[in-house]
Length: 491
Ligand SMILES: [Zn+2]
Image (cartoon, rainbow, N blue to C red; front, side, top):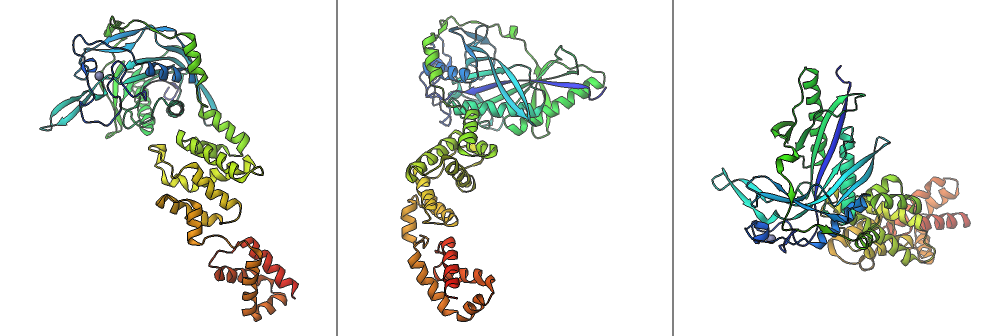
């Protein structure tokens, strides 16, 4: 019966919200400070300290929920999730359980041309735990950094709707993109601000009931997501095919051995003894606030791609690159709009869009790290638009534009200043070019005679001479036209 199994995957994503301060206190929420610098009685869990919800975090959580088609509950409840661990000084985490902030959303992904619509069961708010740092001091000590304790998270729980590791990866990429374009998450898997746990099970094809699942942790890159799920599916198939049964447990991905290993038997919700936090009244959000957040939602990447293809003449692939990161999309749109402005009424959005996308792909993105992380595109959109306008009006060639751009990035100077200073302007003045060509013809009477005698293949040689005489600055199209004209008319 080997092979006659269906894979079932559901994902739980913890996404750190990009607020200035933590969820229940005023401590800074940003990554990168000295250990235990951003702490206070509330996030250290000292007795008697009272939490106060951060309104900006609630708005960001709603923005994510609405972008993912969820319904927002006007009254949700913060509960205590009780467990013991050194990174949890209070002995409980403030989360949401019975009444989460939002439910019933969905997200569609495409894999190999097929669309899978994945249900989003719920999105709830919770605080992050502190961070244990192992192997310090004598090498065996563990210290605790409380900077992360109390940082706001949303947990996004999908239904068990994914059927392969490839679909799981596609869903995560699409989810990360939505959160980043909404400005609620930085999408950083390595630093843990976007974390994923995968619930994986198998069942005989045709069976409705779900099989026993295992939960995979420590999959902090897209590559690991795929590898960990693929490994786990093959492990489960081997267990079942060998007559064994799957044990419900939490397993961790070990990149060093490319396997998953058991961490602990999987706890049930009842083990956490959830109950409403007596320090926090129910979280109320009225309809007007939900409507205001909905009205302020930005254009989502899937809609941007459709618009780039429909109105700017981009291919699907170009549009995908231009929406690879919110900053790339913003830069691209900025350059297009500025270039149209500089070129005036004659500029057609379709042709301009395509050329801007090509230039950004081949030149600008070389300066940006992959995956859009720490994207800092060189120069403001206006700076690149100025350079591309010089290409459009024939002042510089496309080839020269690349070296000018590189100089712009190095020096931070404007395209116009660099072109003027280095004398890079193409010679597009017909009178000026004609006198250069006359000199070239006068100095090569033999070749002129040969051309006029029928060896028209010499045209390329003449173009080369004109380029040499102008140090490459002649507008090649104009040089060609004028050469033909002068060689033919004086025959
Ligand atoms: Zn604090």
